[in-house]
Image (tube, rainbow, N blue to C red; front, side, top):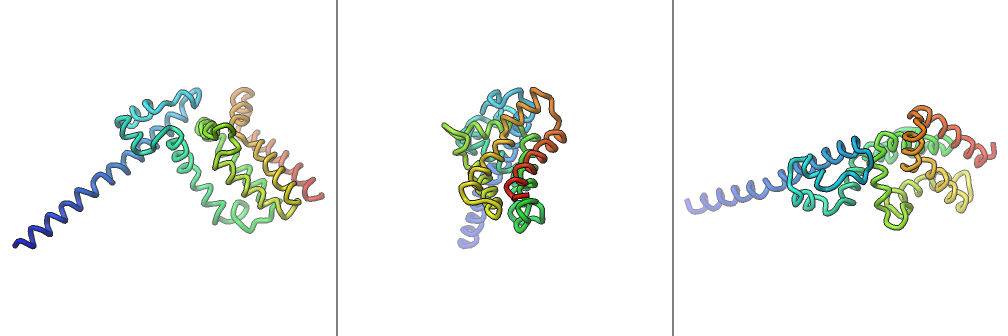
Length: 210
């Protein structure tokens, strides 16, 4: 009997220990959803505060800070969650995004995918580009995309040229440029894609010697 009581107590303790983890996961999902909605509807990414996110998710600010630490970490976590399907397609998907695609096909496809993502998540992307400290080019997400493009361009260009061309092409899909062209000039998503596609084709036509 004594052993039975002990086992039941341990089982109860284990169940009790798991509850906070479930609550934390639920709170994290609610906070990400709230932040996503706020960034989608805001006039400027700077308008979205930690207090706004906590209130929209129906939790206290302490819960928000325990889940993410600070605003930068929240933005990065939300961006990573929304970008995950694209990153999976790039890492292991079929052509034209996936590995093994010839560079003249893959580079335009990668840039088009990044443009579409940033157009659809402009304020979130703007907020993320603002987390790079003294330079947005030092942000982790930028370094990953640059390395990917540089690698894809390596079959067409010498290493220094591939490195610079990757930077130049990424400049065309910066979130602040996308926001300016779309917001100030009213350029639509498909028109912007067409213009980017033509620009990339000209660059790669020269790079490929065609």
